[in-house]
Amino acid sequence: MILAETIGFIAAILGTICWLPQTIKTWRTRETKDLSLSANLLVLATVALWLIYGIAIDAWPLIVANVISVILVGAIVTAKLIYK
Image 1: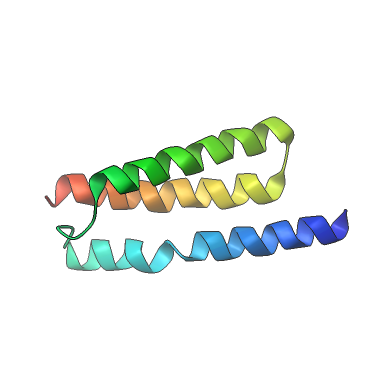
Image 2 (image 1 turned 90 degrees about the horizontal axis):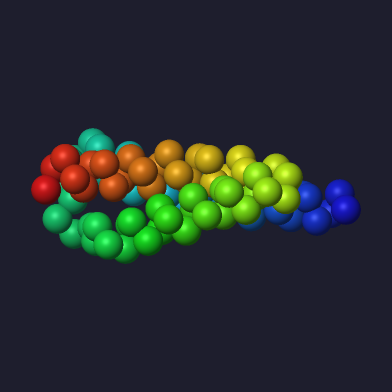
């Protein structure tokens, strides 16, 4: 079980880190014309559902990763809406 949790946390870290550069770039440049609102809304819905699932099964790697992902993708969606 420890190996499975370790793999889960590594996957969670990598999956979460991938949103950080886009979020930072979007907020720094305020440039969102090349970002798809519909795609980012789908990603936001996906990570929110993974978060709910992680809470339901008490899986900390899923919970931690998806709380952070919801924040980062939510920030991208927010920037897209603000900086049209």
